[in-house]
Length: 197
Length: 197
Image (cartoon, rainbow over all chains, first blue to last red; front, side):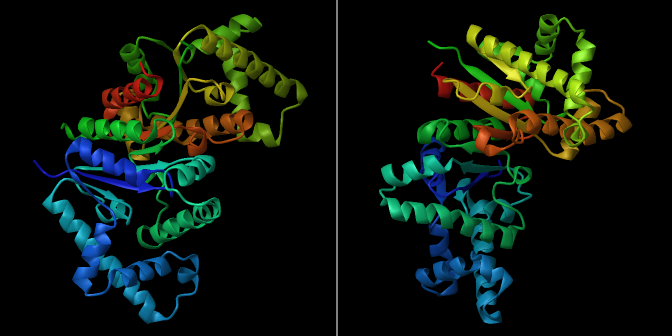
């Protein structure tokens, strides 16, 4: 039986990564998130902080309108190309959950794939920042404002559509409806129904 | 224990009504769709076709920009007001599923409510029109083009937002991911998780 893949794009502080982690326990498969940056770092012989920094530049609204010279843009695109390879090989090797990184776009056309987007309201994000991510209120407000915009810009740049575009997702869910455990249980159930697990 | 309510807005030919019907069997509760028009008709002493016709006018993009005289607009608004009453009383009387009719807006603030939107791609809609709704290809194409626009206009007019607005839904699902039975099973599971059934 071919591997199955679940891709999760998520809004900042929607608890998407924690939900992915719970799903991974429920389904007995790995989930990948920051690990992908580490794999890219090893393949390219560049330190992790440099990869992250280049990705942040690629996520800036300005980088598209005013690219900072060709060499910078080229490096960002090289990182994306290596990342495509890493994600493609993960999907070949094993059933898994991949969080973020345009995995839905990179793996489009995969035979057994479930694309999910996790969102929640501004108020819930703020509460999650304080109660679960233990951020101070000022950082919480700043990050809520900036992180989603950066993720959207990155997704638009490489995939050409917004991460919450229904046409590119099987399901969009507000994580506050069922909370972390409930949302993970619902999505694991969806995987079971879709892939006949 | 207070009643629980599931509202379903759906795109034309996304099989939303059939999914609601299966959910109703799975959860052992009623689902209401056209029945609401019949109840409104009885309360207002107007025939069902006239109610439908007035609702269609209210769904026209033009009726908002160029209302056809005050009396027409007033009748549409009266119908909506009576419908609000009908839906409010249904929610008080019993746990149930309500399809369409801005029920998500009318019942906003209800303590035990799950708001769901069902969509699918243009290609899937066309296939559903042919295979399940047994429409001829020309009617299918015309209805796919017009029905969703009318529903959106109706929703915008009375609720003030689009039916697929994530901020007003707990979940949006592409019905082609799991098909009718699978989607109904997933949504019934969500109701069980949310309401502790």
